[in-house]
Length: 83
Image 1 (spheres, rainbow, N blue to C red):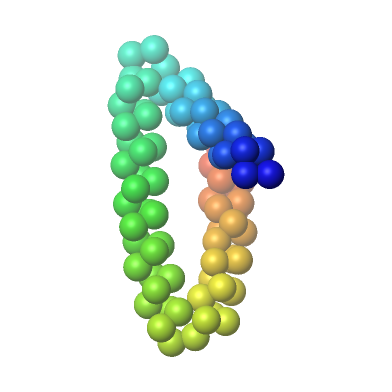
Image 2: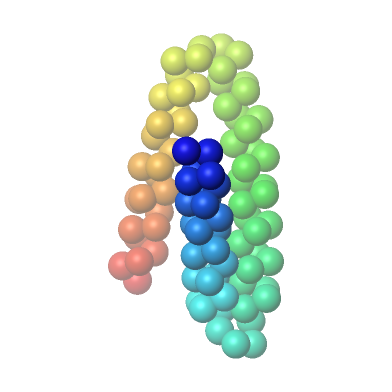
């Protein structure tokens, strides 16, 4: 099961790299991948700190926010796909 989870994680990362490179085009694919990875690092660091701050007050609230995060992503990506 561990190997399957690792394979799925790598596959998702590979698809995101390919999508960023494709959207960036031939001349800007490196910049697109760099921006993507920088945004992921910044959001990941902020999310970890935010989760810890909320969990210090209430574990229930922290996990409710963590469960709502994919819904927020869906709203953001759904709006960008419509453009």
